[in-house]
Image (tube, rainbow, N blue to C red):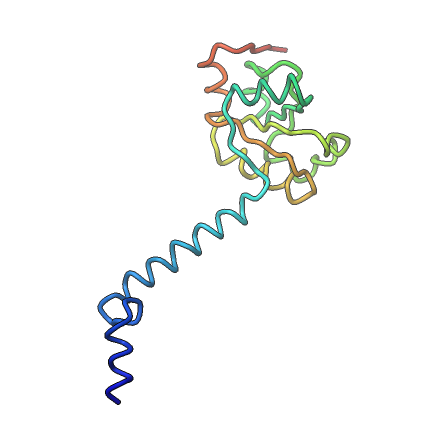
Amino acid sequence: MMEESSIFQNHFLLRIENIFFVIAAIVSAAMLIWSGLVKRGIKEIDTQRVIELINYEDAVVLDVRDDSEFAAGHLPNAKHIPTEKIEDRWIELEKFKDKPIVVIYKSGIRSNHASNVLYKNGFEKVNNLMGGIDAWKRASLPIVKR
């Protein structure tokens, strides 16, 4: 019996007073692993990286804002599929599966949904513009209206 209690006393991870730290470490590791799995192929990128992808890798810009937001101004040559229609219309982008896709939005919720739909359907180079269309405008980058 004496030997058994000394094992618990001598090992930091096995001491009862340290159990909180052990549990916190396990939960933290699980959260890191989970976030890595959920956002596997979807990257958050800045405006400079968007320009690089468009210019050097022929990226496709997908604007997932609603019709009125898109009409008010969007990136040149952007494809438009509102986020609420992406599950039915992602097939329109099938021919661009091998190219980087840059998802443009007003708020992060819509782009994450659209990006996840694309990723689940085999698009491996999905990128969200950090800050959405507002970041693009703040950088004084070109906007077109139809």
